[in-house]
Image (cartoon, rainbow, N blue to C red):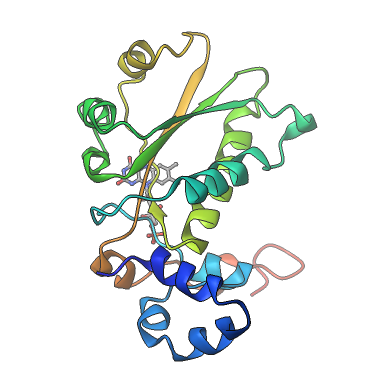
Length: 202
Ligand SMILES: Cc1cc2nc3c(=O)[nH]c(=O)nc-3n(C[C@H](O)[C@H](O)[C@H](O)COP(=O)(O)O)c2cc1C
């Protein structure tokens, strides 16, 4: 699959022709991933567990982690640190500790999301930073997936993360394999979860 990112760059660098190119770039549109508005980004984003070999450029990595840094948090405490890993040997080394996310081995880069348990909100704050990163990445044609089951002590040891801090998740990032973007998105029906004015009013 051709890199979605490189398609973006081509479109972006030609300035005024950009909208024209977007309209005619059916590959991009058919992937369901393009520079999009926030709702479209939310609607189309998928968790991605399979990545092509192409590397994510540094400026895109920077944008993704910046989106995490800009997340809101309780009392604006920003109780988080992001350990950004590009080194392939380190990524490979993390594979054995990511028991529900062995697919990290194929990532272009990974972010270890570390929260500081200053209060009971630190995981919620961290999760908002994760969602920001995930959406910013998707907007750039880059996919990721939350890894939940991790040997946290081993990862702390490996990366020198202080024991008192909490590893919320590890996010592998990379350009998606095409089939992972096209899967059906399964969500509960609106009528099951929306209640108008009072619980139970459908
Ligand atoms: C808190 C949390 C933990 C998750 N843990 C894992 C995990 O360990 N391994 C994995 O492959 N996916 C994990 N996921 C991804 C979910 O399975 C995924 O978000 C869900 O299936 C919806 O995917 P979709 O947005 O592509 O439809 C996790 C997601 C969340 C929010």
